[in-house]
Structures are given as structure tokens and as C-alpha cells.
Amino acid sequence: MTTQIISRVARGEYWLKACVLSVLITYMLAMLSSLKAADPDLWGYLAFGRLFWQSKSFPYRDVFSYILNLPWVYHEWLTGVIFYPLYQTLGSAGLRKTAAPTIL
Image (cartoon, rainbow, N blue to C red):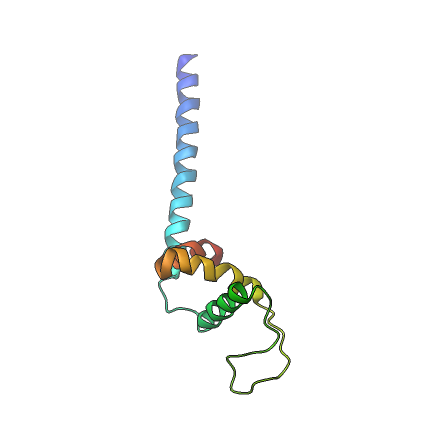
């Protein structure tokens, strides 16, 4: 009877260790995949995020374009709104570590 209980406990500990290990491996793989060069659009996300937070409104004109005064829809606005404060508080390394789990 006690050997059955011990084996059940051992199996439970095995599954817990396996789950923790799989989560750690997944996170490490996500971190390694984020070591590549930054997304070319990252500067735009950060610039428009800064513009949003400073003006407290959405940009309806692309002020960073060569052709000014054309109507424009910023369809990736949420990325800039989230990434800019993260970049301000955590820096580039913190932004990379925070965004790494979203790759999966």
C-alpha cells in the first residue's frame, strides 16, 4: 500500500518537473529566436507610440513620410502604444525579453 502511494507521488513529481522543464525550454527557445536583428518596423512602432503618448491622440497623418499631408490609417497602433512605454521603462533588452513570449 505504501509503495503504491510513494509511486503515485513520484509520478506526480515527475510530471511537475516535466511541465516546468518544458515551460523553461519553450521560454529559452523564444529568447533565442528573439536574438535576431530587430524588426525593421520597430522604429516606426516606437516613433508613432511616442507621438501617441505625447499628443494623447492617434496620428491621422504620417509625419515621418517623405510625402506629407496625405490621409493615413495607422493600423498597427496598438503595437506602438504598448511598445513605447515598455521601451521607455525597460530599455531595448527589456522590450526584447517582454516581447519574446509573444513570438510563440
